[in-house]
Length: 341
Image (cartoon, rainbow, N blue to C red; front, side):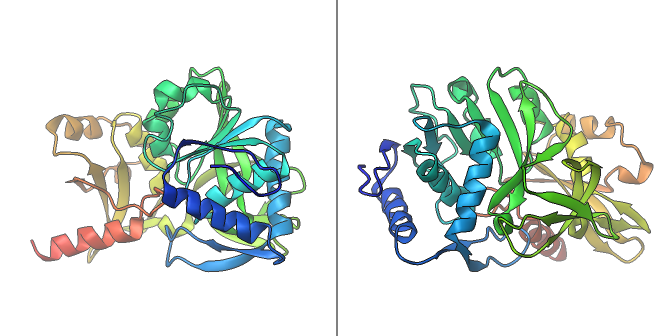
């Protein structure tokens, strides 16, 4: 694929004609006279939405990421994310504004399969990273987003000498506004970019002031612990909190514990229960296993009520198109199955 847009150099590593067309369509929109482009949300926390974003704000976001990572003109980047969503679009914008040489690979669980040389910058989902561990030494700066990075994956990449980061952000912040280094250092907190300030509301949920990205102060449902003006620790989503017998349970924290012991996707849900209000259950993406059940029993949960009342095994956990676990669909699926039991 040869780009006719603004001298952007594009190399086709492993991309089909349909993916190329989507990239060309975005580039046509980007270099058009319009001051905005259309972006679709993932739908992981609700119904997918389509809205328009000012190009100048996307440029500001791209510059923040490139500056944080020290990317310079002539460096290489690799796009292996769908361009329907902000994550893929922003990889293109970063390459354009920093004059990076861009390689493209079909979005898949193994996007680095045909990679044979070093790349300076790439963004991937946790699932893609999980299936690309042997190729990670070729990526000098890797950012991982779209879903939380599991404890087991963190352990697998902890020995990397290259820079690997977990991202924090959303469509409304034009991709990420903070990064947490996973390797070679293992950091506990996200660090926000310059020109961004953070605070919390009375629920202890994060508020983001990023005037170069969004004119509004963004109120999230993410429960956080603020360390200082530039760092925070993510605790979980307020709308994921499970109220079981009057006790508030943060599923993301429990999932992190489980994933240290279980090499499979694990999701805690609260199912409606007459006695408890919500009954805590654990869904494991695996065949039923006595070994896994025994491991779960031995996990040192902080509170007794953190132990799941029921453990369910499922062949495939529903996910959104960009790889995020869809808790809404999973809860509906489990609830329907229980009705028919």
